[in-house]
Amino acid sequence: MSAGLSEILAKQFYSFLCIYAHSGCQSAQQVGNAETAETQKDLCVATMKLIMIVMANMIKVYCQMFVKPKDVIQKDEDAKKLIDQWVNIGTFLQNEF
Image (tube, rainbow, N blue to C red; front, top):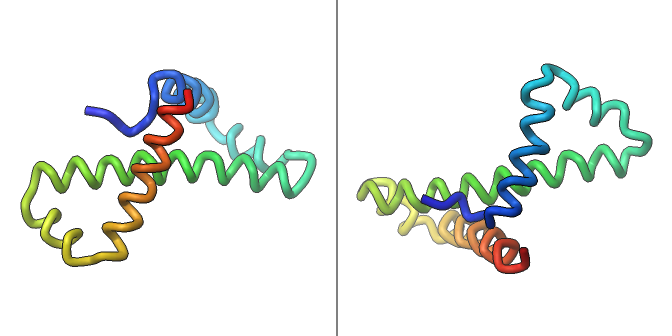
């Protein structure tokens, strides 16, 4: 099963996120201690985009496994477009690396 990321991207993000996940509140401190508000924003945005890619891929796989969620997503055109958008972003990044 794929999270929608290339192996290189996955290793980079895993390494980055593990450093902060396993060091308690240092991740929050890194954001809080950033030199500029723009740097704070960049640190948050990159992580949130990664989460959106992974969540979209998880939803897509979940809907392939179970009929009821698939039916719900198929009926909600906006949700379907949003999921497809983030899956496509992940696929594009995967192809770039």
